Amino acid sequence: MSRRPQRILALAAGLATLAACGGSSSSGNDPATVSREYDYGQPSYTASPPQPGYAQPTTASGYGNAQPSPTAQPLAPVTTTDPADLATLVRQAQAAPAADLESADQSSGDPLAAGIKLVAAKVAPDMKPEGQLAHGKLATGGHLSFAVSLAPGKCYALVGYAAPSTVKNLDLNLLAPPLYNVLAGQDGTDDNAPVIGKSPNPMCPVTPIELSYKVDIVARAGAGNVGVQLYSKAK
Image 1: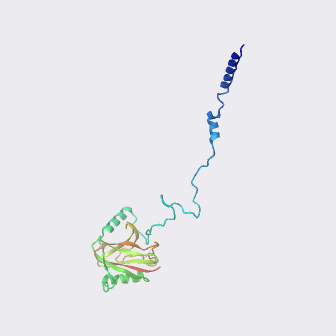
Image 2: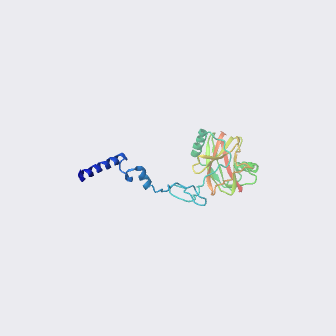
Image 3: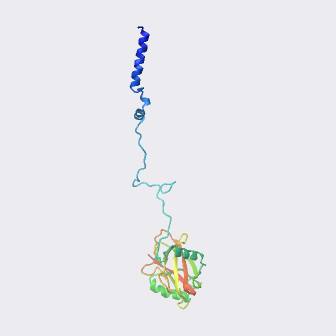
């Protein structure tokens, strides 16, 4: 036999052996081998928990310790808890006309001012009048409103009065800023001399700055002249 047929037979035997062993031995065609060769063990990056002493993001775009915006806190008990009743109260208070305001000198000798002074001697004995006297005339179910500024470091009481022969049930509601749709306090009486912040539980704001609240005056029963005065003392 010539050498050429021997070479052909040897080549054919080699190809048969290669096919029986599963094909090429190149590691580049074996996915598992590729994975082993190119898996460099890169670490995964996950968010680490907040570390003490480092400022954490406070907004989507900024870092640092954000200062909370001033928000009013409840200052006295609130009795209106039904959402429908609260919505009605807020709507009426926001639509209420402004009460008239008088200085202490102007109110001297006024029977409303005298009545408030007598009530305050009992419910706010260690306080003094602050700001102006709010007053006006109300029909049954009518509202008046005025603003009071309450500052940290002080405690307050709101004292109202109407002659008992005119308004038999005078109510006070204190509405908190900024939208005046949240009650910060209500009087708990059904008489002609409402008080918010009655001693020994006055209203003592804890906000860092002075805030302006809205006082809603309501004649629930009866009609006539009404007055309200803010009282205060150092905390």
